Structure formats: C-alpha cells, structure tokens
Length: 420
Image 1 (cartoon, rainbow, N blue to C red):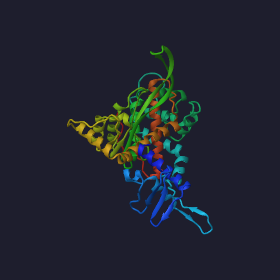
Image 2 (image 1 turned 120 degrees about the vertical axis):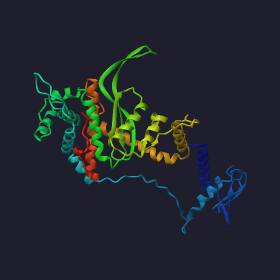
Image 3 (image 1 turned 90 degrees about the vertical axis):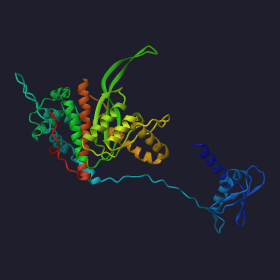
C-alpha cells in the first residue's frame, strides 16, 4: 500500500469517528463540524462537484478532508418519524469472473476418453515408418508403431506393468496391435533412443487438429522427479547429502485448449532461456499462426523477443526492475526499447496479455495430476521417453475434449508423414 493510500485510509477512519461521536450542525448549505482536536469549528460546503472546507488540511491539499468525508457520511443517514435512524450504505460487490462449462460435452469426453484415445493413438502410430527388419536368429522384432502405442498407452494407464497386461490384450483384440508384447518388453521399449525423435514428432502431429483454434501461446518449464539420487557435497559446511535427480520439461502450449505444440526435455538444472527460441520455431513449423506469446522473466532477452517477432507474434515478457531501454540502433535493441516503453507506459494493457501465461501452469498441472509428477523409469533415455509419452497422452486428451466441445475433426492421415 502506498503512502497516499495509507493517508486516505486514515482520513476515512477519522471521518467515521467524527460522524459517530461529534454533533454536526447544518445551516442551509453549510455544515458546522467541530474540530477533532478541540480547536474550534470548521465550515463545510459539500456541494458537488467541488466540496470545500475551512480547515488547514483542505487549504493545503485542496482535496477532500476528513471533515468533508464526515459530512458525506452524515448526509447518508436519514431519521424516520418514530425516531429510529436508518443508515444507507453503499456496498461495492466484486463479481468473480466465471466461465461457462458445457457439461454435456465434458461428460461425453470423459466417459469415452479411454476408448477414443486408443483409436487416436493407433491412427497417429500408423504414420510412423517401419525400419528395416533385422536379419538373423532370435524373436521377431516388434514393429515401431506397436512399440510407441504400447509405451504411450502404458504411461496413460498409470498402473503397473503386470496389471497393464489386461489393457494390452484388449487393445490387441480391437486391432490396435499387430502382436501382443510381454509387459516386460514395454519397459525395454522406453529405453530405446530411436523412440525419442518419433515421440517429439507425434506430439507436434497430435496438436495439428487445433491449428485453426490456437493463436495465443505461453511457454514455461517444470520439473519431474525420478527415483534416483545423487551424492551432493556441500562445500561450505562439508556435509554430504543425497538429492533426488529430476528432469525439466520445457514446452509451448496454446492458451485456449492447453494443447502442447513443442517440447524439450533437459536435466533439472538447465536454464530456461536458451530453449525458448527452439520452442517457438517448432511451434511455427507445426503450422500454427502465432499472434502473441507470453512467458515469465526468465525468458527475458532481445534474442527471444526477436525470434518471436520473426514469426509474426508479439512477445509479452515482463521486464525486470533493473531493465533499461537500449540506446544503440539495432533490430534487437529497437524491439527491446519499444517493448520496454509499452510495458512501462501501458502496464495494465500489457498485463492483460501477459496473464495468459497462467494457462501454461494449468497445462503442467493437468499433466502431473493425471499422469503423475514422478518418472518411474530407471535409465535416462527411458525417463525422457516417459516424459514425452505423458505429454503425448495429454495432447490426445485435449484433442478428445475439443472434438466434443468445439466440434473439430481429427484426421492425422491427412497430415504429412513422419520422416524416416
């Protein structure tokens, strides 16, 4: 609270005390108000639009003093014929902004999600090119599309590998798998480095049906814990400690449907700033027409602003307290300076766009609450693939919700095939 707000609040309190304990006398259009300090009386003329008072506070500030406010309180009180006093109070009611929910569409999406997700995931996996079959002895290799389907569906189920066997048999019976894998094989599929680039491409491909819907985006990063620990030595205190290893998920999402358009997985101590440009570029490559992108101060930099502007979008990244306009005349410095002045002079308008960034927090909450905030896999490659599978499952759930609520069409076969 500022000093002026404190002073105004103090004047209101003193005005209430005067109106409640002192006798205010009205003579025509003039009100006689006794001094609260006992130094005589003051004349108040409450006529709008410029009420006046003879006290020193009003003469110095030329603004409403406590005596004027007290008279205004008294004028709102009316005395009835039987002697009772009726006080008329003005109450300001702040209405919370709510968003309507199409419960019919929501219920349909939730009750049919599992079966529709299998169909969409199967349709996506059909775009995966099959590698050359290996020659020699041994068990025939499972197709790459079956590997991705089994691994992603396992992450979606959130149950153990043995209990997931029932879901695998049902998927095989529906024709979504060409061959039924063993539940232990699903864990080995996640350890394959060959799955990582395909999972990233499938995430972008799964977001394609929402290209006509999304134009505003938000970016951020969040950590996922693992079951592994690392030995940490504190140099200052000479103590050893075991700290949990965790990975960080960087993503860009649409603010309307929370669909993830691009993603990158790094170690838990990687900085957020260097990955912003890649997320923006891959979102544009996926076919989205971006109008604005919001991110927190961790992404503040002329390079990220310029990368956003090059794709036709406006960057809404708040400036830090020590940020200053730049004097040199380069494209980056000119953009920085213009956004700095817009942020400084039109703060309310800037914040209206920037607050869309809260949707990326919602996206992370959706992923973690539904598919878990902990990675169960043991190896680094499997942990990365598991995190990507969580994002792919989230995207398919968003698409299913949009199908029922927005009436979009899903036709992944019409999209470009994945590169081999």
